[in-house]
Image 1 (cartoon, rainbow, N blue to C red):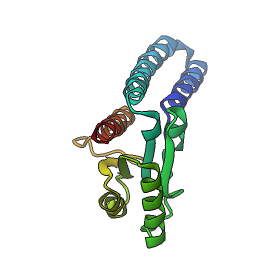
Image 2: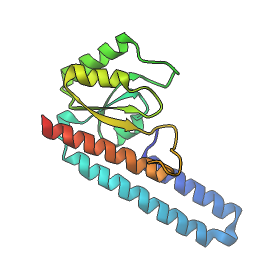
Image 3: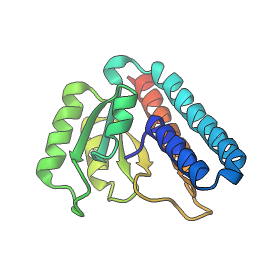
Image 4: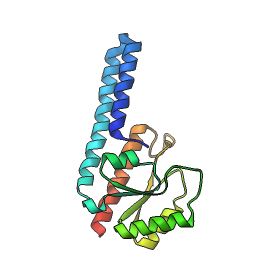
Length: 174
């Protein structure tokens, strides 16, 4: 899925390409890239700071699909999911049982799901294990302009907030 750290690389590559193709407007491209990069860095720093408050043994990102591998890597989270990629499928009893077993074994306090798939399987996992359902995360799509994630930056901020709030609340409940 996404990574604030990789997004910084994308911004720089886009800036370089625009400056090369349209040098007359280089100052604007440079300023816009710098401003956007600062916003990405702020989201990264806030999430990093929040996650430092979560005990290391509770830093799990449990979701419906394996869409958060970059995020898990960037923030040293262990990842558990029902299926590796969105295969246009619903969860199976076997997948639910596997996640239940992993959540119980690792005493995971909070789990999540993506907004693009049914969260019923994860809610079943939460009910069975006693974990909190931390909410739905946005992955592959933005919301309408009136919704919570009309832009990419909004998506990053929203997901970072949901993840950090969920993990912090879950760690305090244990």
